[in-house]
Image 1 (tube, rainbow, N blue to C red):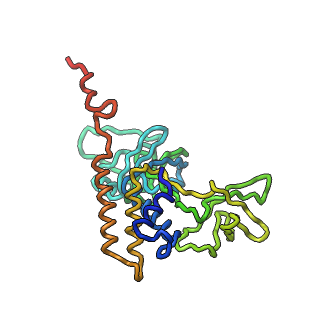
Image 2 (cartoon, rainbow, N blue to C red; image 1 turned 60 degrees about the horizontal axis):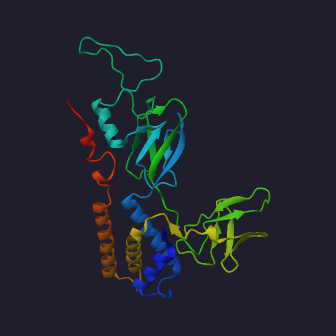
Image 3 (cartoon, helix red, strand yellow; image 1 turned 90 degrees about the horizontal axis):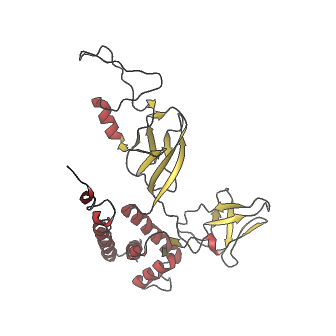
Length: 305
């Protein structure tokens, strides 16, 4: 677990701007978040799951908001392979797609090798028991379940968790207790890019709220909602070993800021330091076969006669 304040203190030390004179706290928070997204997309950690319902009309799935990409999927514990759209087109053109069996169909055995009838079906419209997930790229916004399921079922998608933005200036959630009997958790929808204390905050109910950081409250007309410390997200679920990579990534972006503060040489320097850490992790992070049960020692317990 890495804390936002810890990363930012390292960033301002490297930038020699501990008083936030050249870069505001909001700007640095944005750079840290951008660096976090870049790191997570590279290391593909942490992972998350999302269950969705699919049927004849919902076989085209939108990438869940809590996932940055899709690495797998399963239905009732049965894993579905992931293939690309170009691979499906290639297999279809070669007639090598797996046979889709529908209820009521039967097979015919031909003695001779010259078929007298052959049906060609568009793979994008074929239906049957789901066999694969089709995507254009790893972070595709749309995931196709192939073939189209004939009955309603639940699919579990797995992928890289999209980290929520961290900010100690603007709350991420708040309790809407305008109805005292049915309080609701609301989410702030602003991107916060270039946010200032005079801007209105938009919640997921479509309301523009005025945020008072002094008294920690959100107001709209006569409604006022109290903001508590747990309404802020100030940490990310990333191991502390990555704190330097996040720090260097944020400094890299700070030095690329347009106008008189732009410094390409320093930006490239910290970019290379970040990449060196990431490359080293790719070399050392994978689990060694001998470190887990069923690794290199597995064959020693197999007796062959």
